[in-house]
Each structure stands twice: as structure tokens, then as C-alpha cells.
Image (cartoon, rainbow, N blue to C red):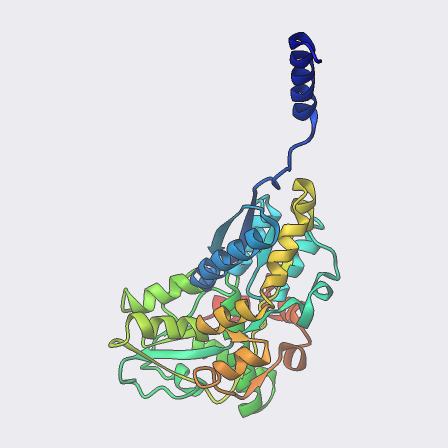
Length: 338
């Protein structure tokens, strides 16, 4: 028979042994910072909530996702200067390239790491007018009329503004023939711009809330948001030619590897390609890349006459060098405007 002393000794030893066994460990909570461009605030609020739920169900891990928004070029500079971004979802690949060129935050071939050159959705540029379109603005030609004031952000800081500028340039180049005519056209357009905000959302506020300007050169999704919020005050029209905008996404390698959170950050970006996320993308008036979501949102996102930056400008590196670098075409145009 086991004595009371022996039983107590066994009980204590068993308790100590159980305490020494590793408990089932829950993954440590993770916080991600998504540094993005101006108009994606609403999109990523919903995407983030859906991903957090998805990731918790899949792994048991709690994720918090913080957002930072501003002009795309300005956001890229903030990351280069030390903003602790885990993922960058900027307005154009040229701004993302700057993360490689200035400090090696990401590898040179970053666009090859996800499908479709790391662009899970696309967009384009449209023209937002006052309700009823009182100035009868139908195409890019109308933006150089002396009676029209144009609202657009600063292409030195805003990715959306660069898409705007290049869309107008290519329209004029095709219609009037050659870069010299295009430059003169864009010069007349910027002569009609009373203020350059640093980002697309700032220009949206200038146009819709401060009631400046007759037309706002806008992201397509931003135009829909303005129509939804200020439906009795604004309309928008699709120009005869516009540009296919391809906002690209990447993990910021230096930061995620330092924190040991690459797996979660990568999964977050991969999630953007899932049908669940693609549906959210279409719901927020971005152009999804999945066939299913494209079909669902085809009525609100019609097929358009769009050109790619590669075919018209030789890609972002060349476009940035010619048009947006210090002393480039934009500086020449803006410094000599009346």
C-alpha cells in the first residue's frame, strides 16, 4: 500500500513535471503597418478587417493592421526616411522602385514576387465636374479652355497626379501629333490649375468641400466616392482616352525581416488576390483582376480605351526621368506658367 508520504511525493513530482511541459503556445500577436496612397483609406479598412478574421481562423494568430496614407511619392520618401512600413501599397511602381534605389529596402525584382507584376487591382483617371456639368466638359480638350479651372494634385508628391499628367500628355500627343504639341497642351492645362495639393484626397477635398475649380482630374474610385457622398453636387465623365493605372504592392523586406514577420506580411498581400478580397476591391470601385469579380462589377466599371505606360512612355523609370525629375518636363511647364 502506498503511504501518505509516498502519495504526496508522487503528486508533487507529477505537478512539477506537468509544469515543466511546454503548454500549447498561441502565436504571438503581430502588428502590420500598411503605407499606402491617398484614396485607399476606405478600401483597406474593409480589406484589413476581412484579412484579420481570415488569418485568425487559419492560424489562431491575432493581427492588428495600421494604415498610413498620403501622396504616393511622399509616402515612398517617408519609408526611405525611416517610416516603419511592413508593406507598401503605393499608387505606382515608380514610387515603389524608389524603395530599392534609395536604401535597398526591397530587391530590384520586387514586382516578380506576386502575380500580375504585383498589381492585385487596377484603376484609371476620369474627369469629375459640377452637378449637371455646367461647363460641358467632355474630354481633355475642355481642360485647356480659358473659362475652366482644373483641380489636380502635385505630380512631385502624388502618384495619382502623375497618372493624370501622363494621360493628358498622351491624349494630346495622339490628337495633335508629337511631344512638342503635347507639352504645349499640358502647359495650357496647368495654367488653369489654381492650387496643387500634395495628394489626391487633398484635391478631392479642395474640389468637393471647398468648391474650388470646375473639374477635378480624379482616380475612378475617388470619383465614385464623391458621387456617393456629394451626389447632388458632382458628376463625372470618362474621357475618350485614359491610362491604365496599375498600383503595385510589396513587403518592405528590411523591416519585416528585422521584426521576423515576413510570413504574415506576405500572406496579407497574397490575400488581395483571393476572391473574397477581389470582391471588396470591386465594391470600392477599384478594378479587380479576377474574372469573377470583373464580371460582377462590369456595369459600374465599363470597358474603356486605356493605354499602358510601357507602350506610351517606356515604363515608369523613363517617364519619371523625362517628366518628373528635377528640371524635367513638369518643372519646365510649371515654372513658366502665367
